[in-house]
Image 1 (cartoon, rainbow, N blue to C red):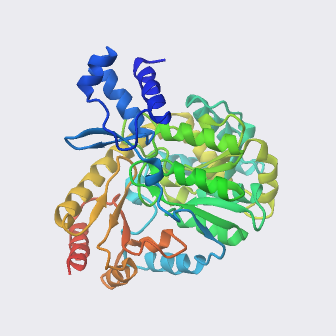
Image 2: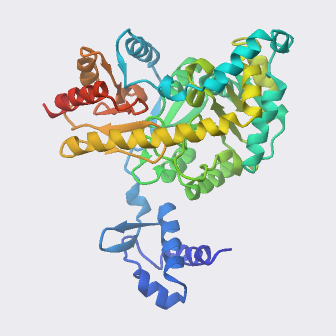
Image 3: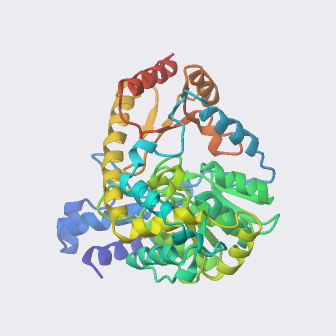
Length: 463
């Protein structure tokens, strides 16, 4: 155990035993150095670890204080939703976004020009000429064995022991989520969602007739563990569907410390987790974010991901780490999507086998980091007095909290008149909350046309 971990555990005991009271100021970093004998860096790391766990908080120029966990949880923050009706709203929105000539700043997919891989298209063309290479493939689930083997190898590289039989190939990430939820739930079961989350989760819950319990996002950590624990205590939750890395639409990535606590809570309650991790490869730093599947000791996590956010919507090939649910999910596939395009699966095997994918990912991450900074700098400089522009170091979304009186649905309609789309916040909450927030796709090159569109957006907000 590292020295910083030892110190963090000691301080955690003082907090949990009520030796230190809520909002009590902790010793300063230098005072803690003198008292503990540890280095300044060790003390700082320990404090940051406790802050990540939500046990303490910091105030600028004032130091660190003990958090009040009861005060952190607003009354009625856990909400039950018996009747969900969002599918028609999503349908109308998607139709408007795809209309000819509309600038798709509301799109959920990165710019196809950014994701275009000449090598992949060349591989696809070569495979198309070699018809026997894919026409003789088994057309039934769970999908191309070599592709499942390559995906399993990627899990193993993350420290997650995986066999190709654990993987089921799906027609994209949403198909993986749908099949996973079908495998573990029945109509009327309770599912826990984040209050603001990708609309596909709400659509699936609506279609399957599930009762949805929502918890709010934590303003610092993204995931509110206290609200989650309250929901598990109050309701018979069967499964959680959470997005922990590069959250859509807000953009945050939950820290490893919070993920470890989440895994402990889910294991203790024996609740399943559908982990929506389609943005797992779009991180900016050197280290890939932790998947909760890596902490799954009881095989309660079904991990879902996809190539569509890294290779483009045309390569809508996803998968689910199904484990013990593999056979069940395959039977469900036979009654719905059947199998994924064998030509694309075959091309992906060739592409992934020669490390072309790793080079492509490195280029995409670099471009997204540059573009997101450009969008953020431009918008934040002009909207700082009106809005809060949420910027997190991953992915390609900016979440903009508008003035309280400004309805994002009205703003969305006005911008459509200018052939500009944005994603209104109410799209990500079936209760039609978040009406004063929008999501912006920042993956398009920062051209004069983009600048003009952003200026129109800014002008409408400032009005």
